[in-house]
Length: 292
Image (cartoon, rainbow, N blue to C red; front, side, top):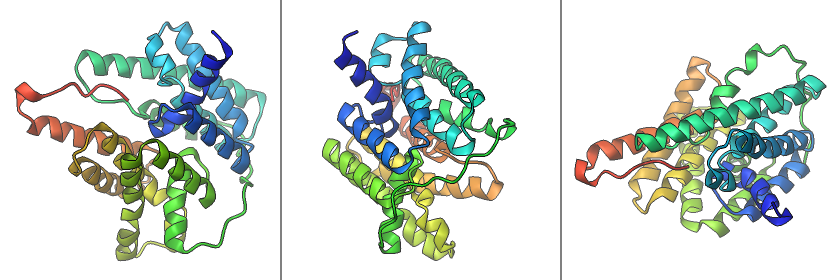
């Protein structure tokens, strides 16, 4: 494969975390990880390389590999593992093994989705593997050090961080740049994602949640993702609105139950909305829901 297509394939592993096929957006994400969380960068690069490589070894569909569908879960795993555990030879091996497992899971999920006109897998492979982390006997990682925080009002800080937290970046500036990148590539979907991130703020005030929980951006991350994903599927406004609300409710429920949520509320909210659409649509007009 020529260098340029290979680089494009590599960068799409980053951009598809936000459901974007644009390599330039992937380059933005890569640069922000390097600037804000340099200790996570090797894991992200390892995942971005290992995912497509393992997909080729397993003879996955070439179109899916080129679209980055076998890269984004591996990128997220490559970010999550060094976020939780200190670097060691064992951690490198673990990133590779988890990347292989994510490819195998993604292949099964995509195949099942297409055969049965099913639902998109989104980041389900990453979430399932992430839930296995507590059993790993590895040394915890040191706290991240990255860009200095800007003095911003709480609502702006929380909204910006909601975008950065998708790739484990805590800096508001990183989140703001990610949103701008989305706005350039998919203006309507980015606007809905902004709505999802902002939606949680009045809910947090009404529920009396601690300011730290609001400022972290984690509260709005899944709502923003759900609104983004569902807005990309079509022009109907009800789907992203319902997805954002459901993601918030599911995330609060998982927190109350002590379940690590990661991007699970986003996935389940989208699947519930898509299932609801399908049930309400006449049988003769039901279309396949497969895809990312």
